[in-house]
Image (cartoon, rainbow, N blue to C red; front, side, top):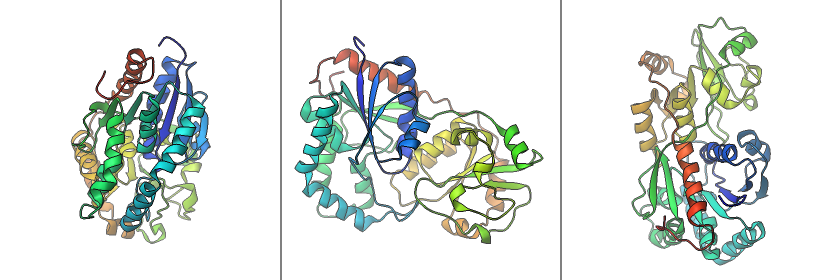
Length: 373
């Protein structure tokens, strides 16, 4: 870089998985260029952003996308999502003008989107070089959920045009197929690493040390199983979210367990109990945790996430009925019986930062378009 750069980061408001992808890349960028400026557009709580992203950055509160509307962590509101996309695109020019204004005010050197297409469309119109980074895109997710809709092609057209306007669309491993992107570039796995604090957790909770410690994390949407009705499993301790307020001695809140981060908890536990999601699966596999996960077969990205986890990590899928009943003794036994795979190395973090360097080196002036680097 010839000068201190200013990056504008547009983050999807659909859950925490997009933050799990982008934060390690921004932290590597900060490590390489501690004086670089960042502006982050997001609707996630600022405290959550600052917990994951190192260094100083400016937050612009605003949603450039909504992904898919959700009933809970597992179920999509398909009809409502389709209506929301129709309304969004009916106001396309007004929304694009709003995003244009935010970018003009920030005056960044580059845009990195995970993965709001509105921001990419605005960057293209203003001639700001942009990268997209995500394991999915909303055009293909919408197609997977609403394949029979007569106006699907019309809805997807501006989405695909915006995604293809990026200089490169970086696809971290594992990603869903994106056959209609002309600028796709595969990367290695992206995940952040935690520290093993198991000894401190055992002391804090009064555990012997030979228990199976299971961290329960079903994502950023409210979804609490009926844990009071679950059978007790001897030798299993479940770490539960503080908001769940579970009154069982075998289900302490993770707030009681340790003062470290969620990444430290993943690194320290034997099993992560979760739903299919990029951040959950890669953080478990890269931190050496086994994964017990609830089926999410109607989510278009799920098959590729599951196939990757079962090939490179340790995982067992359970049904939604098992989530309700707590009939988990056999799935846990099967999971713990698997030979432990070595932790996956998250090479995609440095690879994505390399692409940012390449972008700024080869297009110091605005105006470069897709396919030119």
